[in-house]
Amino acid sequence: MAYTEATKQTTLAAIKAYPMAQGYNDEAISQAIADTWSIVLSDELPDTVSERGHRLLVLHNMVVDSTAQSGGVSRASTKDYTQEMFDWSQGNDPYMVEYERLVAKFGKGRWGIAFL
Image 1: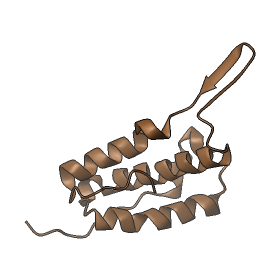
Image 2 (image 1 turned 120 degrees about the vertical axis):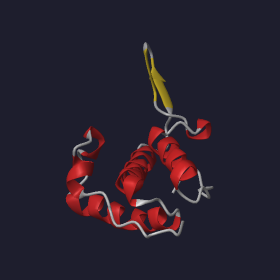
Image 3 (image 1 turned 90 degrees about the horizontal axis):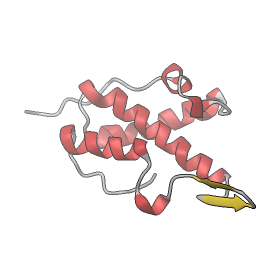
């Protein structure tokens, strides 16, 4: 079956519904939406899952941005308090894991870059 280019992109409203989008202005979210759409197209996700895949990539970009803004700290502690965020090296960004699953199942399955 021939691939028909996806047309269903995620939206600003869909991304803003996630708590992690708080603190990002509309322009930054819109830019992330525009920047990641070409990846969805190159991975040939069909329309049935393209919006979901696109949303996952935008949220992944926000995870990467948030971690970069914090200096990449994944674990910090002071006296009696310890905080641990996700660990880049373990590949446990849930948005990227789910995107890779969608590509493997529905797309070309050639996603080989761990992080954008």
